[in-house]
Image (cartoon, rainbow, N blue to C red):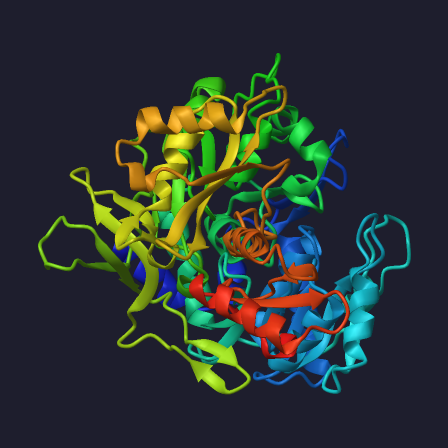
Length: 588
């Protein structure tokens, strides 16, 4: 068994205060063991194996190559790669030489250009053309607006094709760097949760290494663990919490396809993939778990499989219980943040079934719950501190919101249960305030998700002239199920005793909008709710369209039929003001 005591983790972190030193340590112990198990297609009978020795060789060559390009410690290296072996080597190497910056592959060219400028990116690694993705074209357009970007290196996803990335590695010369200053900013991750307004969180070399070691200790990875990671590498959970934490233990990371859980073939073949890859732990977001729940296990034995790890957003207790019954294995929940290098609390992946919660504090992590009355055991705002606490957000105006004395404000409301586990009770900013009555969306969502026809549910605030805000529910249904809004309203009335907490409006959608990492994009639902209410009150005005691009869902723009009169503009302003909404200046 690996030693995960705080003393042992501190000692390992002292010897390997960077991801490159961490990889060197694992490669010295297990040079010929698999580090990465990669399937180009979910249906491939055999994967491509990268050993620890091979991964270290690639990573050190990449680090030497970046240094030869004139990359300095403060220069950004943008990484636009899916879940492939090259993304691991590129990230570790970039963090050792400059500032590694994995970018969301779905961003527009304009958004990429903004982030390239903010990260001071001098080089970029990007995947070649891939079915359904034009990321190289978008990067090329962004590069035209980014004078600092000097080098673009393409990675081919097609076997036996010319691969500029391999040429880059082969031509690298010089000595790979040591870890240098452990407090140097070594990575940027864009964050913003479900707000739709990304910020670049700064993580030091020590933050990255600490996140990996602390995650491994919190989840109690076993020696030789095989972890199938279905989260993207631009997400700190997929990158640090799962991939790097597995590599610090000498285990193997399984990439089921370049697109992970976004690949329909991965979803449809998940149980057979677990069996043939000898996966011991599957990592998926709850929205993906909802999709695989309907996939029959059939005759798959999955002898090495020990359980599922999930995080990124709240897991429905009923969905969790149903999947545990289906697989006969426990689900371990993770609570993590970009601002803590991916880990806060965790239910260990140790074959134990636990109550629905987000687990125990990770080793070396401290927690405070600031309740209104200060009594122990009460619910309150969650604050966290550890060697993984980030260094503030990088903005165009400078660094903002760096933790004070290391304490990270999570924005979450939580409570420590009698079993010592943290339970999250909602997001402070998501609380719906109806005529002064605070409504927790989680209460509504858990009640709704208990219905067998419901696949996804999200309760958000809709502006209201009388109550200020009213709870509004958006749901999607499981395949093959039918449900009317009236039937769902009756279910809610039977299970929620407080009338103010019952949703005033219910909308059934084919799919709820998701962020790239599988979280429900609540800000988009709040925007939809604001537009719906505004359309209702402005129905008599000559309007062709109402739009909302404001992430707080407070500002609207109006497209008029012809040129609007001053009287119509004043009337629209007056009616929107009663809803707590306003027109953006362009609309005036």
